[in-house]
Image (cartoon, rainbow, N blue to C red; front, top):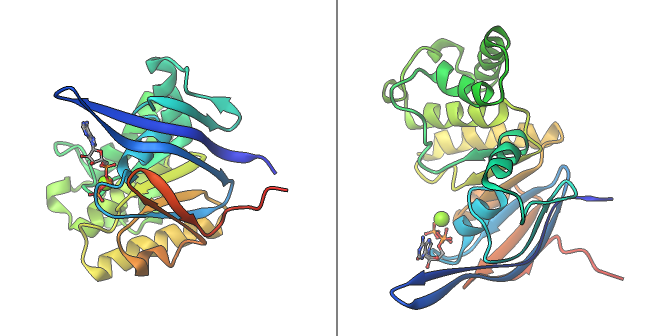
Length: 231
Ligand SMILES: Nc1ncnc2c1ncn2[C@@H]1O[C@H](COP(=O)(O)OP(=O)(O)OP(=O)(O)O)[C@@H](O)[C@H]1O
Ligand SMILES: [Mg+2]
């Protein structure tokens, strides 16, 4: 079976005041279509750095990122943006919704970038918001939504372009436990429907939803419950 995502020897160094800090150190990881993977590790271990590289929001200092057989390490900024828009759905801890537009417009936005026709993108956004249980709140601005509702809008926004892979960085980190459970139910549903999910969490009870747990510390993979034996 081919890998949906393959990281090979990824390192990321940050230069500050003449000192180099190695945030990721030779990380290799393969993820197949339909996998649900949790990434765990202490604060500062490099989880978000890794997610940003996988999500084409940042580039590694060295190593290769291969998404659906395409090596994106050498892609231009423009190409990276296009890959991000078609392959990646990103969900952040702080929701990252546009404050001055409605839930509906927030969900429509990725389709504006993808040049989807206005009527089509409207209908898709409405359907996606219904799927996350927000039909009643489509016209609310983010400030008029609870944290859990805002995160559901963010998930609808991430899913509306039908991405090959969903990346979620502490998606329940700012939520109470009931809202967190609602969000995890959406991810479970997505996984059952064949979606590929990579989720960062500090919370063991959240990680238990995943079928595979990758633990990182100091920019290195410590353990990987799903590592395949190479023969
Ligand atoms: N732009 C940057 N410049 C310098 N150092 C950075 C930069 N971004 C991240 N780092 C450092 O890289 C390390 C990894 O950061 P990262 O955000 O990936 O950690 P994390 O595992 O996501 O932590 P948390 O659980 O707190 O979110 C940290 O030590 C951080 O200080
Ligand atoms: Mg982080």
